[in-house]
Length: 243
Image (cartoon, rainbow, N blue to C red; front, side, top):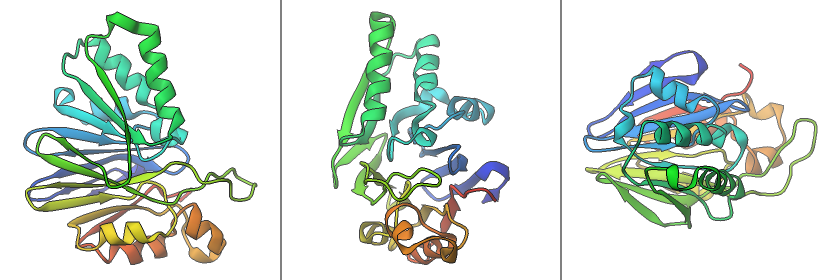
């Protein structure tokens, strides 16, 4: 596993190659997961297209994009990816999956289709994910599970909950769990338990620096994420803040 600046990390298992292309809280996050057949992208923050191209990842291998939630640092790069795929003449359908009720991703897709219409050479399959729903792409089973994530604005109190999901990706008996942004919730612990790899956000450096309400409803700290990560065989902490 490589750990570099801006959160770039890579993990190679028996069935999956996992690349955290970028992950910094309040800036961007996107994670590329591939097996021998296809690849999926979990989230597409600002610069997602740039990072895919810079790492020379096979654009033709992209089988679908899954979003954990609609905050800008997780979905701000979607329009660029769609525009690029249109420009290069992609033919294959592209599933784009979002949590049920995630208005931001839906709006970008609808706007893109409205602007470019019949000049888009591929079909964007826009889908909402329900808790427990599974999707199959290139031999990968991707299961959505609910997490707890409230909105937050610096200097303001905890805001209302937003639609948010984590994903459990499995193929050939190997499992990778991605938390997305979340507070400490039981569903994440259940999904992380026994996974080959857990990718967990750790926005806060120390639990003592924030309130218990924030840890339960907004983001994990490094300590709380590491505690959950210990339930898996290996774990990676991502989406760190200003450090």
